[in-house]
Image (cartoon, rainbow, N blue to C red; front, side):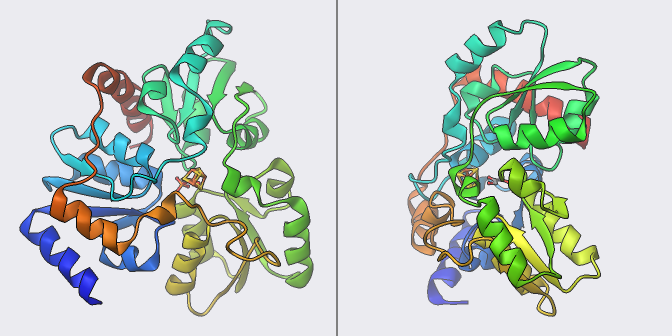
Length: 308
Ligand code: 13P
Ligand code: SF4
């Protein structure tokens, strides 16, 4: 542990705080986190924590979700730049107008969305439970937003459903093209290909498995293969390298450099300096207006009821 990490751990203890980190965080943050996981697991951790303060090392919609489901806690987001380009793809007003065109179709909204949009949805989903959530609905026609690639994966898996998808993408995963993937596959022909559902359909089509970040970790653990091509943000690859030193991992951003693709600038805007400042100065506190919080909580709770 370096000096900054020790200072953070000491403050965390004296202030009764917990650090929740997404897998895309830098290794130095994951080393001091109480829990590291995917968006679904982080939401469950946030719901169940007894700590007074949650320092959320992830992006804004994740910290907002923590505040929505556990409003008595103070939730801090270390970086003001930790937004999410995908969450910005649909506003509450756009969602209201869209669902008015399909009055009998329920809205399944990806957790990568604003609290105001969640308040307009019927049920929230994450990359690890989207299939289960959609399957649980009796309706034939279902609206899914904002990620069209995740919606496409579910439409392929559940052909009995008529999924109407909003046209949003995550720019980080959209940068992984079929050409890049094919060039990495040609270099490592025996490696298994595991990608995130936010990837393009032509990338998902070439994969052995399309999984959430925690699903990818479980897949690698259970697989007999020793080489994997991983289609997601670099932070998850860092975790895999650390967890499975006997296996080899190849990113889909070869031969491009890491700086050009597959590093989420929002996730990477958290660092040890601003985590320390978050705890010292109690910044940046997440506030959700009560009427929005209650509406958003209803759609998140529905997800939790279906999946817990
Ligand atoms: P996971 O829930 O799979 O961790 O995904 C979150 C995310 O933002 C992926 O870009
Ligand atoms: Fe949002 Fe994409 Fe970054 Fe995930 S990787 S937080 S979806 S911008």
